[in-house]
Image 1 (tube, rainbow, N blue to C red):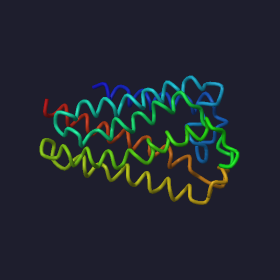
Image 2: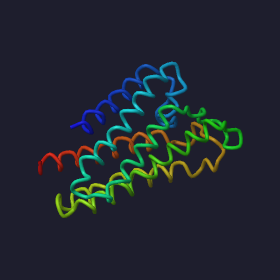
Image 3: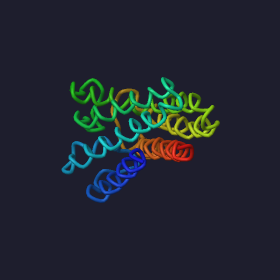
Amino acid sequence: MTALVTGGATVALIVILHVLEPEYDPSWRMISEYSVGRYGWVMRIAFVTMAISPAAMCVALWPLGGAWTIGLAAVALGALGAAFIDADPIMTPRAEATRVGRAHTVLGGVLLAGFPPAALLAGVGVMTALGWVLAIASVVPWAGLVWFLIAAAPAHGQGGSPEIRIGWPDRFCLVAYLGWVVVAAIGVLSVV
């Protein structure tokens, strides 16, 4: 239940940030940039709830899949770290990134690139208890990651711009990852 509540809170907080800071164009700005804005504290809370959701899912799935689920805790650490380390503005070229901004990028990468394999491994690990549902559901997070990587490819380390439309893939990944958590939670609740 914790995973569902915190996942829902994450989505709600980010929707609120879209309203509070409409100057961040969602088509090309990453959600991490809200952490450097006027309402950065709201994004920090969203990162914390974003971390709690997969961590809680790891705990809930552990009795069914053991070590197969540990990747969910690892990606939660990426989100938790990102909560306390601000991103550089997206238009910052890689060569001009601050140490803090680079650390945020690494932690965000742990979450962004780590969730799809973690979800797949957890899905495979619990298939004897929950069937193939979670393994199959991990296709959606993988699709989000592929979309993001294709959209980000033109940047080549030069920083973002309005021509590089990574904002929607970034948001899709968030929704896909939290959607997987919802499917996992429903699965766990069905066997409890």
